[in-house]
Image (tube, rainbow, N blue to C red):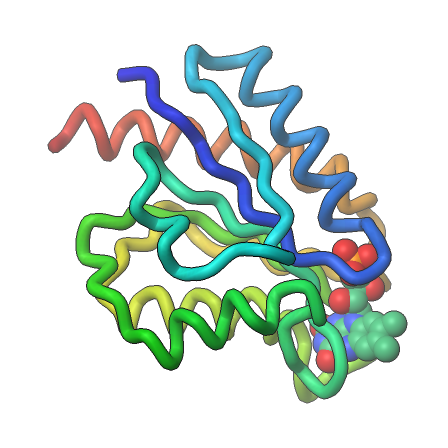
Length: 158
Ligand SMILES: Cc1cc2nc3c(=O)[nH]c(=O)nc-3n(C[C@H](O)[C@H](O)[C@H](O)COP(=O)(O)O)c2cc1C
């Protein structure tokens, strides 16, 4: 089944956005799914009323917080407590292991809040490490291929 993959991007200095753009190109290359890429800046929880599935690509800032452009969006979910039981999502998180106590907390916070509102995680949350060996966009392209396969096998089983 081909459906829309809504990529929601939380980024401070553009790395997550670059990863999301490469993921979009890969999805369009390897599948029939269409892609909408949205920066989190102006989003609120009503974005989850869109058709399709959701892919959050977000970094971590401050002391283990979501990036500034994701703060209002995150709060709209945590304060509004929408029913997200129909939502399926994946998360690609970006962080840096030099922040050992808060490594990849941006993606972790989103996973926790979406699950708390009833949404279903597809696949496993990737935790990219800026201090590791692999470039984020290369890791993103590899991970998204696997994620698409998991999405399609979950659909086939449904
Ligand atoms: C001021 C600052 C604070 C950060 N805090 C964290 C953190 O608490 N945990 C973490 O895993 N990464 C942290 N990072 C690393 C970023 O999340 C990482 O470099 C990421 O790739 C940046 O992506 P972006 O350009 O899309 O914002 C921090 C980076 C900066 C510059």
